[in-house]
Length: 383
Image (cartoon, rainbow, N blue to C red; front, side, top):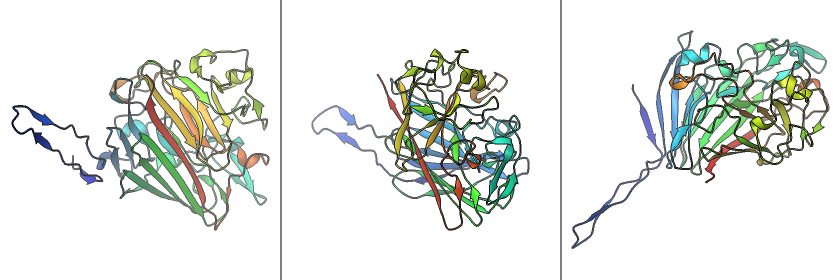
């Protein structure tokens, strides 16, 4: 497999000999940051799909394919310093094309749900695909998760990959030619920063996110033991078809209260709470500060592995999804069966169904404006 290696930092290895001594001391040198490119097969339309591997000096690796901008692999250290893959996904392009539940993908034009697949701009109604219980979900039948993005490695001290895609006017029913850019950056402190931007030539709606499924036990078992904290005192209750009712409900005295750390599985089967029943667990948006600054939104700790993940975002909401619809029918990387609640998602976003609910923060983008948002996933270890 042909690889092009772009070395971002070159660190020589030195061998020191102590004069007059029989001992030779060797310094241990960490590998330099780099980006490598390789083939990941072809789409059904014979479009080549590339994989880019971003690696920092600590040994963290993030693999991203141009199909869907998908993060296929992401390693993080456990309490013993062992780097292992902590995201769900597939070993080949065929797995992602056979009906993946958005594993690791970029989502657009609109992440989450739009009621009945309909919205209006300036009195003109637009109709989108009803691909989830009669509602529109994650951009439609062929959202951004199913297109091939153009990729460009970026020069700098830290490995970064720029992905671009032009969504043409009325693609999946959305108005306007939307020019999108997403930049993945792997930093020296074991963080991955995702910067999103977009412009349009006609007023439209935009709500981009990433849909990685995390299992901080290196994809062993479920995420029910993961301790979650969400910096939010309100969430959006939903209808039976998971459309927000418009209420911003306090989390206090409900299974949705993660203002202090709670195990995902502690209250996930509380059938006395109607929202747990509707979601089949957690599948709800939590309200954040939304002040445009990069604020800490959520923290996840896996006690057995010691891995800790912090999520920072400029967005006004974050969707906590506990993998309720996984059912063991999908076989992922290394032959692992993805059973119910094998992974969890923390999707930074604007409010679901925002185009139809004027009280929610606007998702409108007009010509001359630039959509910009950033999210950071930072990893560390708890002993």
